[in-house]
Image (tube, rainbow over all chains, first blue to last red; front, side, top):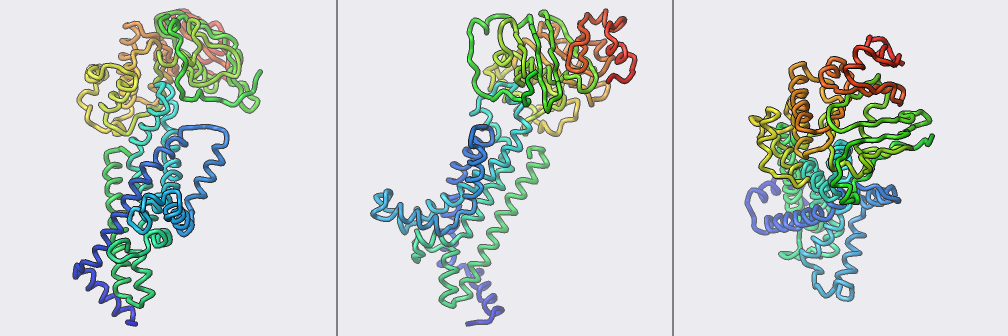
Amino acid sequence: MQNIGEAFHLALSLVLSGEADLYEIVGLSLQVSLSATVLACAIGLPIGALIAVSRFRGRGLVLIVMNALMGLPPVVVGLLVYLYLSRSGPLGFLGLLYTPGAMIFAQTILIVPIVAALSRQVLEDLHAEYAEQFRSLCLTRWQSITTLLWDGRYALLTVGLAGFGRAVAEVGAVIMVGGNIDHLTRVMTTAIALETSKGDLPLALALGIILLVLALGVNAGVQTLRMTAARQAHV
Amino acid sequence: MSDLPITAVPPVARPRDEAAMSRPLLPLRVSGLRLAADGAALLDGVELSLAPGGCTVIMGPNGAGKSLLLKMLHGLLVPGGGEVSWNGTPAAQATARQALVFQKPVLLRRSVAANLDFVLKARGRDRARRDTLLREVGLLHKARQPARLLSGGEAQRLALARALATDPEVLFLDEPTASLDPASVLVIERIVAAARDRGTRIIFVTHDVGQARRMADEVVFLHRGRVAEHSRADVFFPEPRSQPARDYLAGRIVL
């Protein structure tokens, strides 16, 4: 095994070499995690908004459950999705197991609670500001929800970012339902785990570096967007 | 007296009584309106009748219940007791035919024009009226600006334009000029007076005695959650009948 300095050097060479295998893994990671984030936002944002504008018996319990689900263990999600997608499971006919589709499915389930719970908090604060005006204008619940989602769009980017961060960094669920198959379902986190166990530290480190740079890049992009919006007083 | 928490009317579609929708909203009759919180009476049996037309100014010291009364008349708050009847229509079913301008304008995180577009669309009004409304409040040249970058006076003018966009039969104003400079105050007053002259019934809460003198056709003076005096402006200002109103107009502390 190389020492750490040597491993870093080799890792940087790998990153800069533009090796096809490496970037195939990166591309699949982005494809899976971005798809899961988009799907989770499509499901979680309306749920968060609906709960933000609604008052009903048992709402406190719903909030507790939603918040608790933010900490869903990825391996448990992986196990449940595996059971559903396995040949004898209720969704076995889809033939999704060990495909990127299964990984998207698992990551979506993992981050929907995060998107729903965080967006509920963001939109509830916004609703507290708008509520009387909405009632004065006699807006329907649907009009209130769509207005909150649009006006809170820049704050909600951060929520989406939190979801993406969770998705792209998790390993337990995708390895169970994707199987870490080379050229098919191998993503950055599963590849890092595999290469580390094999002792191939440069490749693991190269992937780790790319993962960090991606996380920084996405964060910087969202932050820039929010700052631009803040300058225009849309936040 | 019922000691109920202050309850907002939930934002749900309200039942429509077509006959009631075609009736004029005025006269207004308020009887025995009560509200209490933590054992303290905030409104303590308000009795009030308002005829069609003109501008009613509601005055009174802090804590007299002016804003609460306004919100109950508009159907935003549920009273602990008593009744609000807009010519036979309960307050909650009259909200859509009224508009309220809040002390602190709540503007959407959009452009000036988009704030008006939103209301015109939500209330099914002709969106071509937008520029006319903006011109009326002197904001046409700022149509593309983000609304939240407007000055206090401009923001309140936009809130007023938004309220007028709904063609309200009754326009409530809750201290709309409380923190504005004198020029902005006069602009707001001119817009409100024009709406009154077009037939919109104005119900205006203010602490500003000078403004009340300029705007009021009649004055309702609230004190400790009750109507201490309700008289024509030309009677109220020279000769207030109640002691709290006399003290208030004389600049003495009213407890």
